[in-house]
Amino acid sequence: MDQRVIVIGGGPAGMTAAYAAASCGASAVLFEKNEKLGKKLFITGKGRCNLTNDCDRDTFLQNVVHHAPFMYSSIARFDHKDLMAFISEHGCKLKVERGHRVFPVSDKSSDVIKAFERALDQCGVEVHLNTPVQSIVVENQKAVGVKLENQRVIRGDKIIVATGGLSYRSTGSDGWGLKIAGQLGHNIVPCRPSLVGLKTKEKWPQKVQGIALKNVEVTLARRKKKIRTERGEMLLTHFGVSGPLILTDSAYMDRPAEEYRLILDFKPALSEQQLDQRIQREIRANENKQIVHALASLLPKKLIPVLLDLAGVDKIKKANQMTKAERQRIIEALKHQVLTVTDFCDINTAIVTSGGVNVRDINPKTMASKKIEHLYFAGEVLDVDALTGGFNIQIAATTGFAAGMRS
Image 1 (spheres, rainbow, N blue to C red):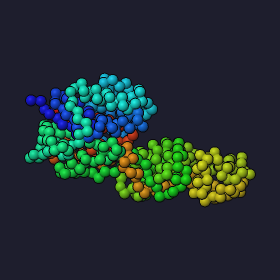
Image 2: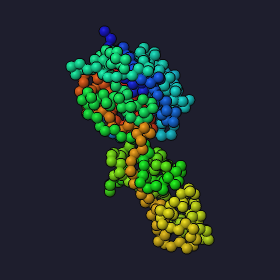
Image 3: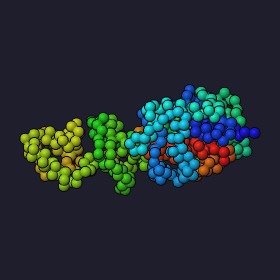
Image 4: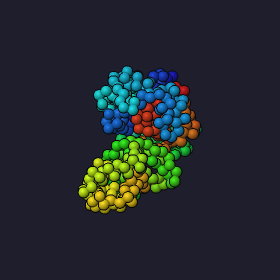
């Protein structure tokens, strides 16, 4: 008799798991509590869906922040080329953009979801929408089925939990799978937001919220230890900071967030000596102007008065009256501006969840639970997360495929 596989969750992990199971000859049933499949997938990449990253396997693993070794076996079985071929073969043409990021040619995430739906339909997966699962039925430490909210019990030979993490709750990611996993004896690594904005103690970013800074350098430090330094783009906001550099930094942080500092270098291409020479040239060229206007070319216009306040320099003072000590304070403010992190932004605004089912409780080749027989986990419910660029959807699809394959 065919193996009956029950998949809980209709995101990329769940859909790939159901497809893999059906492709192996199993009778696959997928339960999704939302009114449609791929609800979170629909909003990823600002609605364009950064499906994966067209990079080699080593680069992929380097972009997995937590527990990259756990992915060794599964990525060898289903990598970015396999995912791209799968989506393309089911009617969604793809393209590769800057940073090897892969998107649908149409720039519509709905086309990726349609490709998944076509695949599920063609291989005979039984999909039930608007069907929440209440619990997993366990007998003698074996998962034998699921109980729906209408109290109906559906028996199965293999149960795959692919219900996501805690980010974007409106898409259905409410932590159900994490709760169930904990109740069944699995260790749960405390969840926190990742790829998310950071709140700061200093309030000056609020005064210039909306300003995007390019070619700045941000150093993330925990207490006195510098963790990483990267140059790129960031955004000043009403709560603190965000943008590509900050989202990446958030992935390398842990709680308590208050232990972290961000050290900003607004002019990383210039040494302090070169910057001093630049300031002196600006002063000579604008010696009769107020300092705030004389230094207008250094930073975005709205940021100059804020910087001078941070440096303790009188904005309306004539440029030719600036002292060497004041120049040094401006240089310090430009090259070593410290922001004190107070917290992550709400997990509901995070791109992914960091934390989840401890990978020590999971077989890395099959995604099978080591606690409960016939129970499997895939996707964001696991304590595996990566940087932006399509890596997290790839993790979901890869672990989903491993869970769905006949073991």
